[in-house]
Length: 191
Image (tube, rainbow, N blue to C red):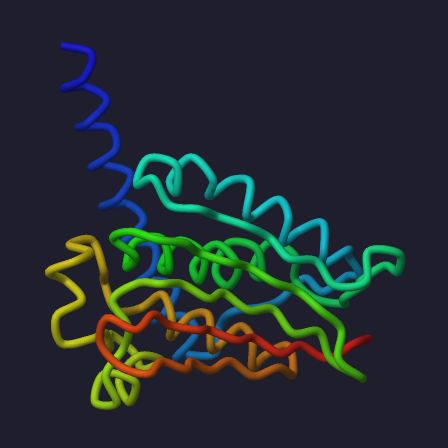
């Protein structure tokens, strides 16, 4: 009975998360989202996001690593910590895990001049040129993405992009094509 209840609870949480993403996207489109910006340590937040995703990676037997930039200096960013954590960092890391059947996911954070560069590189299914055009659009996902991740709403990357841009940053993706992995990169301005 316990496995059945745990599965039902997980499915309910997935469904609630899907509805939450659709509502969040609608509010972003209407311009009704507000951000509670304050300084926070970005490196610590990325490290926390990686550790939260570790059980998910372990379940799929994926190697998950975090490459930190200069460990001696703080990475203070002025932004909405919750929005960045929940809808940017978590989304990109979990997407890479979801779309990587085997291999690895490498998360990195470094400071380049006047910007922080957060990246997630995986050895997953990759992204075609056609699919790249739809990725960051409302409700957009890859042509076959729901075959791999049945819970995809197509709103996660749209939300991530909206939040990154509201913080003065940019988000993008690189992939050499199907079965060649992906690299998602977020650039945020140093405060």
